[in-house]
Length: 232
Image (cartoon, rainbow, N blue to C red; front, top):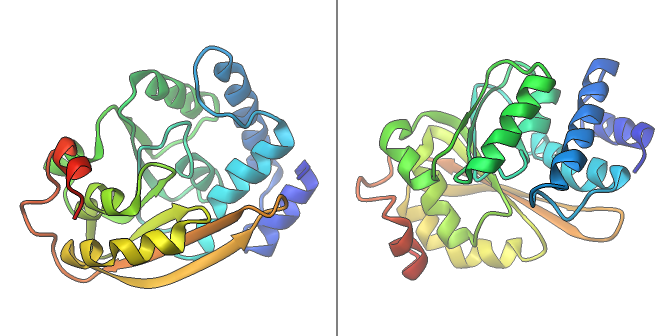
């Protein structure tokens, strides 16, 4: 996917990127490549692949939910999907949770170089953030972090009642959805929708949307060791 194809593909999903936004994506891709030489950020480094498999893939979630209010990205890694969403939707208020300090340094450099406002990085795990940010966000999302049974307990406690948990998954998304249904309901959500998209290399993207209907029981989230050892 070249730059023009990226712009046209975004237009097809309702995002009209202006030249300033495209320049920010170019700068982001350049920083990703530069920093990836000194730390492990991504296995995808070719510009055209970054445009499709990181940037466009991140923006696909805008088809599933209105990108308004406060969004939290749990375990953002190199900034996906939160930074592309912030570039495309400048009014979105973004909180990034990333437990690895070096990645936080990279993300803050991206934010500085791209002159992004209303986006904050916290060097903290999702389950620890719930102590101070519980039920604070309209949208909580995560991409390539953990199996959905584990991920739901890290993310759903952060979602406001009537907010959404947006899980970005690959080809196993539908299977994980079925396996995690009891956990998701126990944590206060129900499934609202799912979206399946095929990228140019025929890899699948399954974006799952869960609406929060009631408060998460206070005993969740548990310590990560317990979540991992005994998923809901």
